[in-house]
Amino acid sequence: MALELRQSLKLSQQLVMTPQLQQAIKLLQLSRLELADTITQEIEQNPILEDDTPSLNSETAPGPDQAPALDQANTEQSDHTSEVNMENSSELPEINWSDYANEYEPFSSYNPRGPDSEETGSRLDILTEKPNLLSHLRWQLSFIETLEEEDEILEAILGNLNQNGLLEAELAEIAEQTGYSLEEVEDTLELVQGLDPAGVGARNVQESLLLQLQRLQLTDGLPSEIIRNHLNYLETKNYIGIAKATRRKVEEVIAAVNIILDLDPHPGQVYSNEEPQYITPDVMVQKIDGEYVIQQNNDGLPRLRISAYYQAVLQDKKSTPQATREYIQDKMRSASWLIKSIEQRQRTIYKVVESIIKFQYDFFEQGVAHLKPLVLRDVAEDIEMHESTVSRVTSNKYMHTPQGTFELKYFFNSAIERKGGGDALSSESIRQQLKQMVAKEDPDKPLSDLAISKLFGDEKIKLARRTVAKYREQLGILPSKYRKKPKLK
Image (cartoon, rainbow, N blue to C red; front, side, top):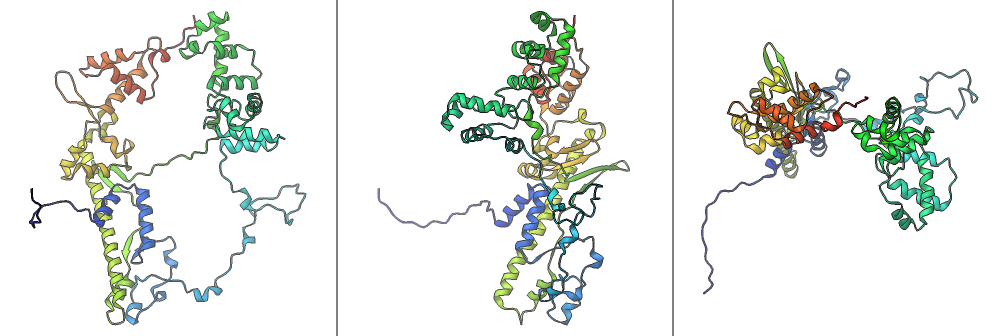
């Protein structure tokens, strides 16, 4: 077969992701806080963009006559950006740090140093961060004299504690890692287990509870015996079984169990330095005069505008070099596209929320139990957009409603079919019904997963036992054997 070169013409269509389109897609899936950070970065990188957000002290802000002037006409524009004249920076008052002394802290009646002492603490001394478990343990160890080999073992032990304060590594592994004997590692572990909080350094929950009882001087009591030998009875609340096994009265068993319930199986959680994550809704929906009104939360988002100063520079073709004009034009296009992309993002979010309200109107009126099955395709077809666009809009965004604050993805649920036809139910409403069934059950005879499945079947709802178990676990509900009320006779 001979090889030859040949020219051919081919016509085809393909989607080209321009940088502007990529930016628009990126903005669409950002959360509100991420969008604010992105806008702030763009303002720092693009001199054409300005933040037009009104400040609290806008009445005392510098006037337009203080803006840099190109000519007499430009000085009359009221939207110029004011600048600080650094040549006169010597006229600015210097900060007197002595003004920030602890004048708000009244001196006590006893002050050995005196109010004018140089050693008086500054308010900066009280600044601190919440200590975590590791720093709390090291602070206690700083008051204990230890040998050099103990310090190496201590670092290995502390480094293998999880957030609950339990030791995850085997003692043999620590001994091999540090090069010391197993006996030395065990002795050092006892030192850690003697620190606060009680139970820290244990190798499992059972040992942690026993260490806490030891701190309470209850090592030989009934609570310790229950934890050592009868945890299986304790898990199922079989107090009669514990009473028979320990040959104690049921009243004594209940008293011992109450002591155990006051213990903390995860002692390290007390010193967790994880900060709570607060949710700020992107959209707020309120019912006004019988209609649901959508309001987007723009608090904290900079209001963008194109700099009038650079617009004037661009129009001044005589005194502005060509290279400068090309640079400004490029930045101008980038700024304009960013503003349009943000506006398009806000319009798309509004359309999606408006469609959700239309599909889930019963939820807004009556609550979670009336949530209907909904998929992305339904909303996409309603607003004439692609499913991927709806998916990006609903990611990491929250809506405040009369029923509470929910993520936009919360309103999309799979359908649970009814027997013999009829309107399908959403999986979330099924979970709420399951929760209500468990709340109303007889504590002496809690409902099993199979019994709950049959109750749903009586209401013509097809729900398998394994599906009930999955929903129950998602709701954090224990199995029936753990929900059973303990028998005392």
